[in-house]
Length: 117
Image 1 (cartoon, rainbow, N blue to C red):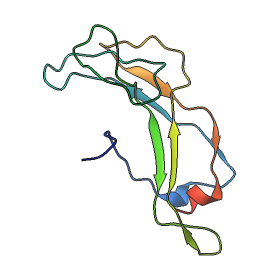
Image 2 (image 1 turned 180 degrees about the vertical axis):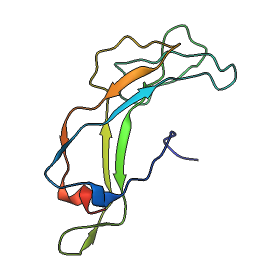
Image 3 (image 1 turned 60 degrees about the vertical axis):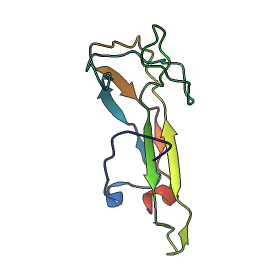
Image 4 (image 1 turned 60 degrees about the horizontal axis):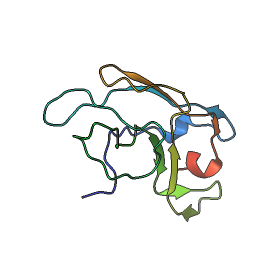
């Protein structure tokens, strides 16, 4: 049991260049786990909520993106704690429960600590 759920994709850290700017983009659609119907989410809610999938008012967080590095090393070869960065959608959208919705993080600079994971 985890405090988070979602998709995961492992990325090759050698593709990241420290000091370069990056943007994360994606298209998301949420569906009810039992009915398969599209569901709403609260676009302004960035923290864990008391989610009720059957509520008429959106209670779930909309999707976000996380960059998580583990077994991280700095340029001197020293290992240090994991790196964890969460990104929320910067697009001002009205969530469409029946279609795909644009996600775009703001620009972020890749720090050496995360690029070294």
